[in-house]
Length: 129
Image (cartoon, rainbow, N blue to C red; front, side):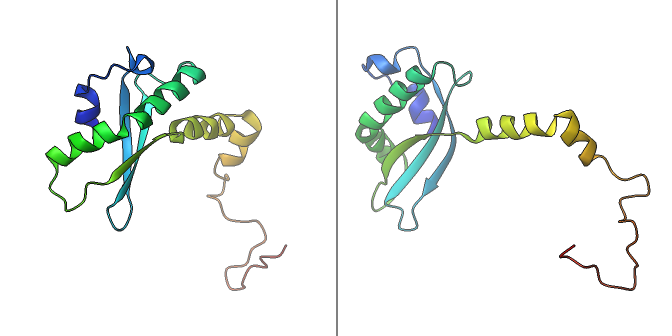
C-alpha cells in the first residue's frame, strides 16, 4: 500500500505536494475491508490541510483499490478506508506526561530495590489498602 501511495499521481489539489506514510493496515477477518492508517510525511503540519488530504485519499480509495488489485492476488480486493494515525501524537503526549518532574520522581526505583516498606514476605499483601 505504501508503494502504491508513493507512486500515485492524482489530480486532486488537496493531494498536491503532499506525501503520506502508511503506518499500519488493518484487514477485516473476511479480507473485504482494509483500514489504512496514514500520517502526512514530515509530521502533522496544518490540521485543516491534513483533514483535506485525508478526505482526498478517501475520495480516491477506488483508484487505490484498483492499483492494489493489480499487485495482490485475492479473490476480492478489500475496500479501503484511510484514517489518520494518531498513535504518534498519543505517544508524544504520554512522553510529555512522563517527563513532568512530579511524575518523574514517582518513576524512580526505590533506594532498597523497590520493595514495599512493611510488607512481610510470608504474608499476602492487602490489595485494598
